[in-house]
Length: 89
Ligand SMILES: [Ca+2]
Image: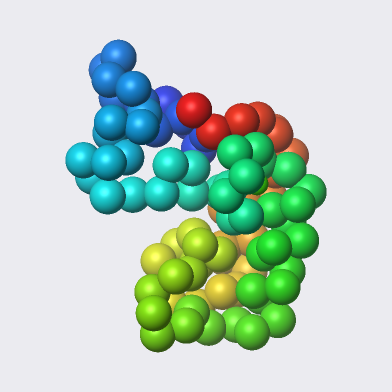
């Protein structure tokens, strides 16, 4: 079970191990991959939002819903995470 948007650990297994096994981003709402969830992620999201679609290489951290688009639904996931703040574990 995922404890929160900032903690991907599972049943005491360190999140880094869980992420490696499952092949997922260490912290999905950490758009700029700096280890923190903050206003810089909102800025990175805004830059991606201006484009609106994911590039074909699959590197699309701003697509938090996984639908191939960068839109308000993704921001609805990001905004509460940024408001809560935190660090990626
Ligand atoms: Ca960040």
